[in-house]
Length: 368
Image (tube, rainbow, N blue to C red; front, side, top):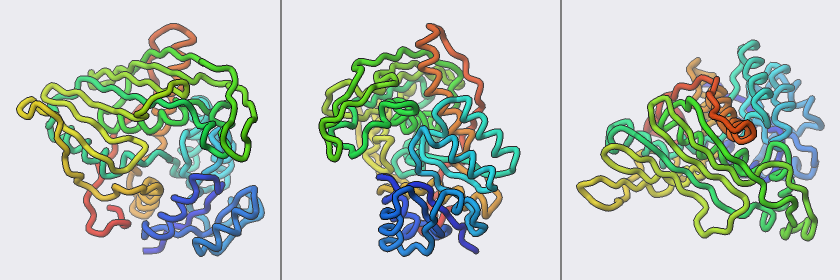
C-alpha cells in the first residue's frame, strides 16, 4: 500500500522523537518534507533522518501536492493559525497538544475540518501505548468492577530551571493545565468516557519567573496564566475524578493517576509515557501487584497517533486520536478556569465517545 506522506511544520525540542519514530518505526508513513523558521534545523534534520525536502516557507510546505498530512509542531499559541492554514490548503492535520489555546478556536478548527472533509487530530498519543491500553483492558474486563472515581496529580515547580526556552509555558496557551493536562485528561476520558461537567479553582502563585537554564539564564518572564489548578469532574458514567496540575510546588514525584472501582484500584503509569508499571490492587490480594503490559509500544512512541491517522486515511476508518477527543479535552481544560472565574459548575457541550482500543498487531509499526 502507498505510504502516507507527512510534512512536518516546526522542528523544536519534541521534533526529534517524532522524526526518529516516523522514519524508523512506523511503516505506513514517510516524512516527505520539513520546515522551520531556523534554516539550520532543517539542514540538520534532513541530514540525520534522510529527508528529501526542506521548504523555504510554511506556504511552500502547504502548497506541496505530495503532502497528505501536516504534523503541526509549532508552539501552542500558534496551533490555531497554522492548523487553520493547513486545513484551508486541503491538508489533513495532526497537531501537538493542545488543539488550540482557547475553546472558540478549537471549535472553529473542528468545524473547518468537517466542512472540508479532512481529518484533524492530535496529541497526546501516549494513551495508545502499552501502559494505558493495558489499564483500559483491565477496566473494560471488570478487574476493578464499576469505576467510581479517579485522582490525577501533576506536581512540579515549572520548566525554567531546565528548558532552553521556557517563556511560552507562562504565556497565553501555556500553564500546567494546557501543558500537562492533556496527558492526564486524555488518559481519563479513554479509561472512563465523557466528562459531563466540572468545577475548578485556579490561582497564580508567582507574578514572574526567573530562568535559570541556558541560554536565557537570569532572564525574568511575566506569568500571564494560572499556574495552580484544581478541578473536580463528573463523568457521564457516574464516576467522579479530581485533578491537580501545578507549576508552583516543590515535590519528589511529579505524576500520579489512580482509578477507583467497586472491586479494586488501578494505578495508571505516568500518562506522559507510553509504558511504565501498571499496578492493580484487589481485595483478595490486599496490596498492589504489577500487571504485565499486554500491548506493544511501551517505549517512547510519539508519532503513534499520527501513524494511526495515516492508517485511518488508508482504510477509511475512524482515527483513535481524532478531533472529537482533542476538542473535548480542550473544553475540559478551559472550563476549569471558566468555573473558577464564574464560581459555578460548568456543564460541558462537546460530545465524546471512546474509539476502539489498540490491538496486538503481529508486527510493531504496522497498525490495524
